[in-house]
Length: 294
Length: 292
Image (cartoon, rainbow over all chains, first blue to last red):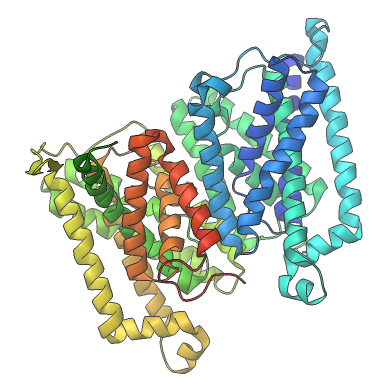
């Protein structure tokens, strides 16, 4: 039971990192990044490949963060001067292209069968302790990222991001470099998603392209939207609700409603879709926000 | 050096794919122009069309064309409902709110289909037809029908937009909604018609796509990036531009499949988008770029 809880805890914290990343991009800057999973994937593969080639894990993870962040730059360059819809669709496309590259360039990525044997963090720790240590490390990483983001968002930089989100024209009229702020938000967020990917790779020790479908992106979206876009604490709460929901619906099977696995998965996404629509219609600021508090 | 007839064959196949893509892209484009957001759920209307037709064809009406007509009517009805229940209530909201609502609608449709029919591949089981030969080039009779239908629809759209009062009103609303409203145009009425037509076209596209390939819950979703590419390449709101851009994209992706890797069609289309945004962001026949 404890090991099951730790396993869920680790996945939850990885999702918290993704949600914090999206909350910076969408919640505070208004960027519709429907391609979040691409940077999660890039982080996972970079860190996995580098450690398999003998790099120390810490260095590989740092490289994963940097490369995921850099990968966001061309995407921003291409779309951030245009209407926000462009980023939305092109980012989904980007994430699907990344996945097809991971599937096809077998010489580098192992192709559809993925990358096995990625070293764990704390390889030498005894079996029972290893996941616990990883969980603690992740928790520290989440706290550091959280604190950093909170500080950043309270700074003039954060206020500028929100002014871009709320009224781009006004922000530009006040002399803010709108595209510059958006680009920096996209890059920083993608770096955080890359960090999440690196932890994911070293926790599972096996990654393959099918783990990085757009489903991941939209799971994170629902966590951020339910938690109340813009507030980091709400988003963390939203992520826990999401994980509870995902894990909870798994047990629905045992209650004997007579749905098979794929129907259960479908039902999950129908509910996610409904939640997105209802949130946009009735509570665009999130479940935990005051109705007018944007 | 590839033979001339192979190149010609690839172009012919690309045109058939592009003719379907055009039907999906035109609705996306017109709705973007009128409602100011990219309706992500639009491509899932194609999936709805394919499954509705399949269901009607196998259980109710054994005639394929009649079943397809009924299936397309179902899509139009669902498009109408989604407009009334979701998008028209969000009128005046920022486009980010609308896009997220549309991704929600897309999920509901796609996974409702998965829930009911499962995610296995299905097909209409239409009779196989011998390809027609023109010299070294082979064309499936289905492709000829597909291109014929698409071409007829686009010629019809062109005449409606150019020569009827409906077309004039639509162009007026697209140019300046406020001015159109104070001039006495019933904007809401017009938008409803557009949603009906756009959804029906996506449904037709979905049925034709299913004739050519297989039916899965992801049938339409995989067309999102190609349709978006055709929209911006053609110029947002330009019906003729969308048609030609879709043909070009069909051809480009067919070449990518032949000389690169079939799974890199999407990457090639992504390349087209990048190129368009760098070189000509307003598209082939667009008047101005959709910058803010």
